[in-house]
Image (cartoon, rainbow, N blue to C red):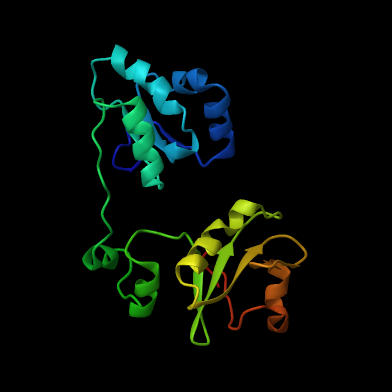
Length: 210
């Protein structure tokens, strides 16, 4: 989206600093993009559409703001209440196999079956074959983990409870942690396969070398 509309400022409301600014000072937040822009994950700041209404009504220029997000029902609800008659809704369809092939020449049919055709639908970094199912993994560069780091893993497991054998967050901290719903694995544990909750070898690429 941002690459196709490069003339518009792009703000992702998943960013904690931007989200806090939008929630605490919506007028000041919107003042930084007086000519409009792209607001991604708009459902994270549900009050913004009410402030956008005044801006849109004062301007005769269409298409100032592009609102995108991953929670369709929340977005539609906010828009229909605050921006009724002022918006055009576009629904993004899944990628076709031909479109996926532009990014990767070959695809594992089993992986496609579970991931679907939306780009990074569940935003899980890795799916390892594990017995008769799969093991889901998220990789975090930070040395701490938060509740939101497990959101995609839990969502995927809830969708396919019979096929996801387990899940882990791999992070840059020093110690692993055991949780009831998932496990936290440190980068240091990767050098000792016997300490891992999943089987198989993970290789990481650094500066073009493995």
